[in-house]
Image (tube, rainbow, N blue to C red):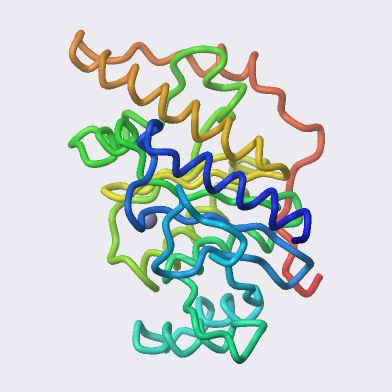
Length: 251
Ligand SMILES: [Zn+2]
């Protein structure tokens, strides 16, 4: 088994462990980039908690992204394109519809691993009336260290192609506005995506998102969270010297 696949299996089982409450049954998915245009993604119908190397399929980033950029493409094209994106044309298993969310992120050279989960407390916030406010602020220094100064927030849209397009749009807007790469994406009435160079970045950010969410749920019972001031957040957040720009996959 290749090293990256081994790391991906370990990451998946960590995120799927029942005690953590991040994903049950077929919920959640994980991925890892192999080379510029290929990544492993959890196959449809597998379970994170018990997955092994046979639970992943290899797909092409460029083929998946073409679908997102095709203005006339609809949900009926998704199944066909996800099949065409498989590296092994004989592959019988299907990659998840959420493969599109992973392709958007894995085209960024700085991300090599992505974890998508539906954690209990994070979703308590994301399924609440205060979702956007709750996940937009920062509440203590380690929150900033693990999750950055800000996360990408995505309001509810139909799952499938509309969601993938909205995540792509909001992610690109964040990078353009902030000049840095985000560590987490929070999708209203759905769940969390974390990404990084190493599996540890994905697990740390997911762990912190869930701990922060549990605390936030508590603060809403006590009159509401006291978010840190922007200047206090900036003092802790180490902004890289260079403004980050998204490069096209061709470039
Ligand atoms: Zn999901």
